[in-house]
Image 1 (spheres, rainbow, N blue to C red):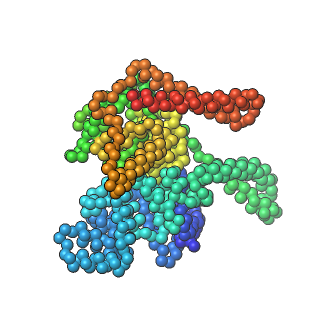
Image 2 (image 1 turned 120 degrees about the vertical axis):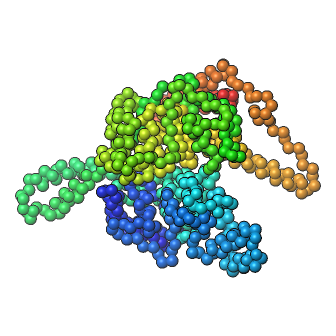
Image 3 (image 1 turned 180 degrees about the horizontal axis):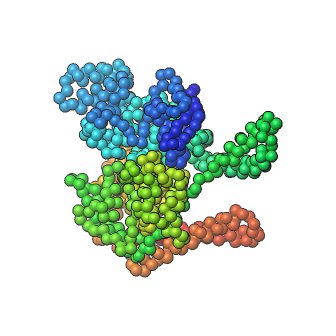
Length: 637
């Protein structure tokens, strides 16, 4: 059953057509993810379908009785209302009853008659189960206590997004339209939201760059490309495969049209001026071929290969760092020596102090105690969550030329600011437009460009994936995988973290930082196993207590390195072994991949195939052994 549809939709913005005569429909139970490069009009299309913006042509229709809720990237509220009033502002009678009930219960001076009245109203509307869901939503989004009474005007950007998300989830509309719903959410909350939105009964249209989220929630992907839409029935992996096939077919069709156009153009020129003497069908076919031949096959690819400043032996040494705001301890006694090619992910709930730590490492914020000692050759490239600041009269190219007129690439080649902008998918015509006309994602891409052209050797990326399209993210990942310096990343994008991170810093309550070797998914698997063991132990103790059996003494855990004697530091020989192991593991991985490719090719003789298989088996054993030893030494390092 069709719930929402748009017919012949067109929209022109900043003197260019985002899309023309576009058709779009959403059926009950569809969970559609809208993807495409920044600036193609994804957010504009969402707003038009939600009834918040009018198309230049066409119309949108919604089935009678269907409620549509929209979550934008920058939620708009009545700034004078409290958070509680904002969340419960719906005309829904059940929500109004829950609001009155919560208000009375939380009022210490409430009258018994008032409590009786609101409870009877809750009973009459069967609102108790709904009230439990509301509490769960508010609890998981961290909207509790004092925050409910705060005015919306006093909220941070992340808090505003969570309040807006709570409002649309609590309303339980028939159709949800979400624009980047995972922005500003911590990783635990994103995983909870995945489970909530993956319901078979939910009808959903969303824009997201989070590929794990997209895989788990969406059952269909719609790509916007050059003003057209292409539908893919499947998850992200299926979309990538089918998109590549579609582009190959399109390239072949365009090349065929261009070859045909040359012949037809010669035929058109040789014909008499009087059109009546020509074959009308062939003339019409000529213009169709001409239009097809003009199709843009692919835009300039963003090649992030800037030169990296030489990095010395000393990078950053952090000793006994402590920071607190009032009674809230953000960081407590943190020490770490950064090493060459460190790939570290920083995770923790919102407000845990991730950005605070990054600001202390870069000298933007001073610790209460402890030291941050950066090497003389360390050059920071700091990509922050703060939006790009610009003058309304500035053009795109002016923003880049403020930093550098020319850019030196990794291969020694020097390119102009204009050429470099083209690598970042800013064509020459767009370079001379005002920055104010760029989309949110295009501004973030421009901000990233400004960071990279400074030739840093220590990249700090604070939520770099916000508002960037998936194509840009894939290219950015390829660059970071080959980046010669250190990388420290804060990101809620688990796919991005898993692709790049080899070590995790976990900010825990009380300002402690747990260090974990591995990527985000490795850490989450370990955490789940640890929690399962704790639950099983508690369940066993409860069962024994119920049976009247005295609980056995809990096993004495090994004291942490910080308790008692200080943790042993690595010797000089162990440090050299650690460095050698990293190189050996890299060589083994490369040789393993080579052996796999040789075996898959099947071109060797019987003896060669047997030798390669034996060598591959031994390489796996060597990798396991060296990997275990590397982890032991990494702990000492």
